[in-house]
Length: 228
Ligand code: C5P
Image (cartoon, rainbow, N blue to C red; front, side, top):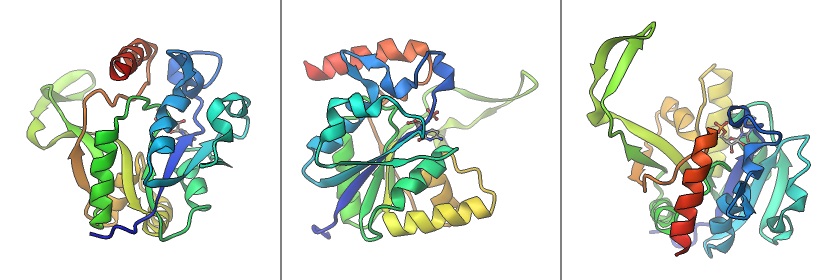
């Protein structure tokens, strides 16, 4: 095990959250009195193994500077890009290649330390990994709204964040994947394309991504319970 690995968290927070249908980006919606982004970042700020937290912001962001976390000594910001992957790349560009990065969506405020620690342990053993949860529902493939067939769910997982990789490698692979026209919806999708082994780490199901308005109440409930 390499105990001297250094970690930086990367938080893509430059999205506009169209599906939430509200006046400002979803990462700033209040949850139990704090912006969703503050909840998503807090664990990384408190964790002794994380040296820095780089947050990618929209070029028109007017809200971040008003958050309490904005002045934290671990935090720095970059301007994000058009797609999530562009925002992640903008952050990776200001991080030393030998760091390990933990990329975590601003829209996942309910991450717990135990799950983060699992990724950190694997990284210290030089293993790339993502948090994930096995699919529980029966899965259907459909054509024009009609079921074509049932997909074997035993091999299916929901990919979550954080996702953990060496910074230099991830930067190189993301750039190559974009040039090759790969649809990079998360960091792992580029690493898979490059043939790199990425481990799936079973995480708590309640590490949910707030996407639709109804997810907000659920996140409030989960965070309130975690506090207790
Ligand atoms: O929209 P979605 O929930 O998939 O976005 C996932 C994360 O990526 C969010 O934290 C969002 O702010 C971020 N994002 C970004 N830059 C973009 C688009 C999304 O940082 N251009």
